[in-house]
Length: 447
Image 1: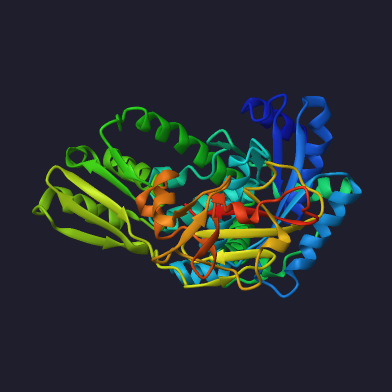
Image 2: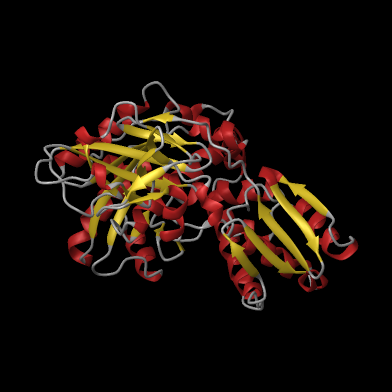
């Protein structure tokens, strides 16, 4: 039934012997079929499979879907990593749509799992109809040829889409033939969401006239990719200067070249500072006008607090997203969304191994009044292994970049720092031979 999927995997060299693949699985039919099929291949191709489940917390019963995935994985002896996020809050904080917030938080989690080397690839369940929808949405938003390419079969050698050329009908037949259980997400019927409107309202009308339109649009995207890759190969981006995670400088001479050149340079630069969301054709024109027709010091503001400044022979792009955090968050088990920073996950452990978590601390050594916050004047930390330093000195010692020191969460009791998120813990909370239970803490940063 999925012979073409196997061919697609091999043609694109998606899976290698020894790969550790995390399947992004919501419990829906697409991801459950992907999980089932990859499990059927793992012994033949010598790779391992685990599941990554993310509850977006958008529905009252969304936890039931995660429970379904967990039970399926238990029955089939598949390791599973469960996450719960608050997409509505991120959308409010950053001015995103719910769809944008969900995507950003998903990929933050995926990237964290990849960085921890739990997996080396993540398999996504996008299929042919998803590809057609993505291409149309990009066109409707004013995208150029790059957006018309749609999704890549492999991205960054980490994200793979084995079902990208598989029809929704073939997936449904595969599920039925193999008795694969799945859940239905009722939000898929809510056409208030942009993609759902296209999927539920627009595409059925188009298919009634042109039944093979999904395949035709996907084929168009593949042709666009060939041309887009050719143009990209002509560009030398070595003169683009990446100052830090939030700032990049692009020489203005790029804007004397053809539009298809400078738009690619700018897009690539913005992707590297996490500021490419909602940048459309009209914005590229504003940027080009700034580069070629404005005096030094002139600036423009673009979506999501992206600021562009003319500085002599460069345009400086700064991702000036909101950095001020809500003052305090109580220390609790589960996930805590830290505004403009990321997610901190706290797991209660009875058994543990060193290296499984970013931080491992003794449960009883964490006071009940400990809170997550940003640094305050007078903060001190007892270093792991002994010795007390001011937090400022400690940041310097640990070579934490200056731009991150005011936004990095710390777990504190008054001015006593117990944990610096993603960096280290105080000697006062470390586990020892007397520890009976611990907290395993993972820190997932937004880009």
